[in-house]
Length: 133
Image (cartoon, rainbow, N blue to C red; front, side, top):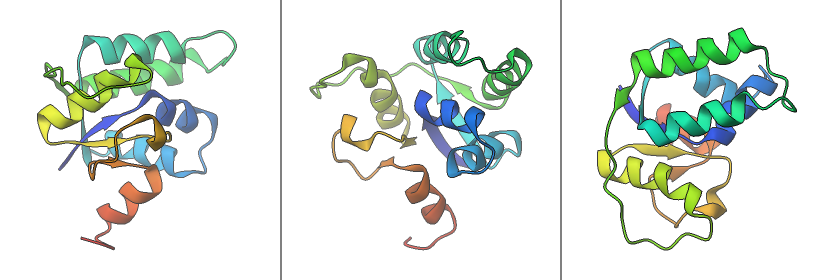
């Protein structure tokens, strides 16, 4: 199974629409095709963002997704690196992926250093299918 760190924007997109690649990635958590890595900071951000009143996501869907991430994923401590970030809130995802040899899946690759383990949902799904392995 592929180790991944899922940026919050992927979960937001997955809850908005069942049509896109972010939704396919969220489904992969439920089918155990991927193993999400997280720490308390990442889970806190997921909760804070996904329960925002303005997003108005159904509480049961958010809870189901978050519970599955915790149940099927791996709690790990990230090693804080020395990479400079414009927005330090992005660091936790990058450092978690780097420390655990995981892929970071994000819709905002421009927020992260240009590293081979930082992928868009489309890039991740193509790699998962072996298109450019």
